[in-house]
Length: 543
Image 1 (tube, one colour):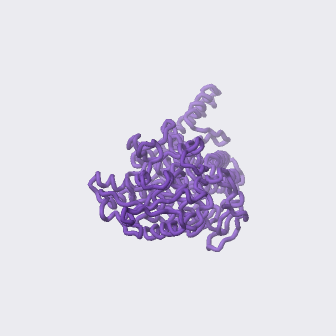
Image 2 (cartoon, one colour; image 1 turned 45 degrees about the vertical axis):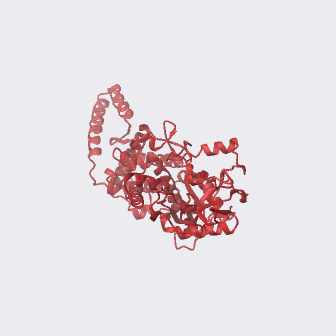
Image 3 (cartoon, helix red, strand yellow; image 1 turned 90 degrees about the vertical axis):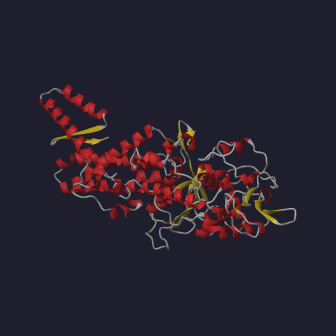
């Protein structure tokens, strides 16, 4: 479903006016398989629902990639001036939680809460903004039961009964009754998969492998012989004998608990009402989770999301990351060896629909990017005598940002192009810095440097990477960028080493030993140090 109106430059939310740049925003839609212009359902406002974690165990890099990807999407909407309502759910009851809690001698709710807190800590450390609402599945049983009743009443679900006619607690969605099934993933209405649907299934592997299928886990309830059609899926399921008594809820169709998909339909409707702008999640959720979610929401009589967006997964040597690869991929383990800023940059270094290959090189490139960013911000702040405040940076509208950055972000959140725009601005800023001492109009020159500094930090902030924002400042990641007078042991040591080389190079040039001077310059260049020569001497910066 689309709305053909142009984005509005005013809104009724009390937020800032929507930027003119919003007119150019185009986003991919999984259902249409096309990039198209974005128009909000409500002028000036955007509603986003993103499937969150099943809190069965510690967060891994594969889990967090989607959170970072949609955090960037959200931040761009906010930079465009929209008021964003962002909902991310927590699945705190399912078979894996129950089984793993029992194996560990834990209460199921205890295990869920422990790992929910771990996910929250990981989000916070990686600079992911808190959602507007973060509902738990267990807090919305009434909503789910009411939604299932509507689907049954509308003739699109059936209650399984025992020999005496009593409800067993199992309720299934009747796929054959819903002719629109398969519209999200373009699968045909047939119980037998064709070649196209098999490819679609294979494109959505799960982070947590389960069952015989390497990538797509199957809800045990969906294997029941009581189903009318192999494609039917559980809306409500009877408890297993091993399930604790406090993991069962009473419903008109029998005691049990919700199926995998129903919670997102219930909670997205609860917090975003009828049709909302964007439903997001990892590519592994496209089928069956989101296909089933779309079907049951509409079968209940509600509109589904206007646009579906899916982030690709993290790979290691071309293979989808999974827990079988070991704890080395857990968020705490990665953060023990790399700063959170570097990890976030690496996770968000490619466009959200692109596969992200995770390797030492990925992290090394992210560290190099940080060094270049921090070096420029520190030097520019020292040159102008201050760092612009966070309030000033956050107030910069998308309309005031460099055109190449805006164009990249409007092109389906192309963060690779946006990062290129940032480093173009840094190179220009470094050139301004190298010429600052030679400018007679020093006040004008400083103003130009300050403008470049503000632009760079505002662009970084849009990606959640301004080094002078939280959590990077408290985490110590800001380093020497924190201000003109801030201490940076690493930078001071590097500056001393490079300065010695520059002094030796100056002596060589003075003695007309240009071969030696060029050799020093080339050696520094190979180490990632850029040299700018001027009448007042040579200055350096990280490339």
